[in-house]
Amino acid sequence: MQEDLIEKTALAVFRSNRVVAFTGAGISVESGIPDFRSAGGLWERFDPAEYATIEAFRANPKKVWAMLKEMGTLLENSRPNPAHLALARLEKMGHLRAVITQNIDNLHQEAGNTRVIEYHGSHKKLACLSCGREYAREEVALTALPPLCRCSGVLKPTVVFFGEPIPWGAHLEAMEEARTCQVMLVIGTSAVVSPACDIPVAAKRAGALIVEINLEETPLTRQVSDWILKGSAGRILQSVLDGVAGRSRL
Ligand code: NAD
Image (cartoon, rainbow, N blue to C red; front, side, top):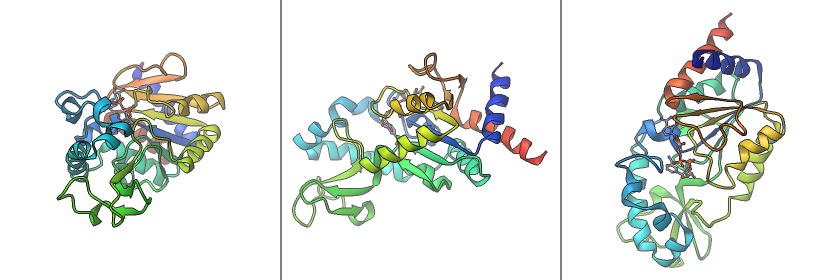
């Protein structure tokens, strides 16, 4: 049954030139970056409700920066896994138009995808909360926390904390991709963080085929997705890629 669904997915991807991937933290778990549920991960020690809100950051930037510094080291040392590499390969073969990601880890770009919409921003840059000036992460020494701008304002990574708006450009681009794609691969997201979880819904309303790839069902599974491929993103995407590549050779 799952094999048939993988074949159906490969055929749909092969036939369309308007395929988009929408990814969440689950795609990076095999790179060693924990999602919000991973046992023994960062988020067991740093409750997202306590550390990942803009109110928490403004109230105590030094405390939140202790978590950000540790997360930054983890992200800097992580490499793309077979799931990221399969999406990059699909783009090279002309079968993937864009990746919309909720992740901030830069792994899609490292894998080789060239059109990546970072819906929740990126950890690679820091911005001043007072004057808005931006810095590359490498430019800023994290010896004293929180790091400060030349204007003495507090610097914050350009990631979207809970309670902050989505970058307008990323939102518009993501919605445009959702409304115009024919196939959306929804990979490794619990689909509960709003408004990101509206993206597959917008694609479905516009007539796209929605294929979920996840270890478990989500709120999308029985309402929005056409089917779910259950399993690790690396293994499933490699099988889908093999199916697409096999057809390309015919
Ligand atoms: P989430 O943690 O809420 O859910 C992760 C989902 O991925 C779950 O449904 C889980 O079943 C699935 N999953 C876990 N391992 C998988 C695997 N190997 N293969 C396939 N599926 C797998 O993540 P979310 O929905 O992205 O929402 C959390 C928010 O926190 C997002 O904004 C997210 O980007 C951010 N976040 C980002 C990172 C990162 O940049 N790598 C890490 C943690 C959280």
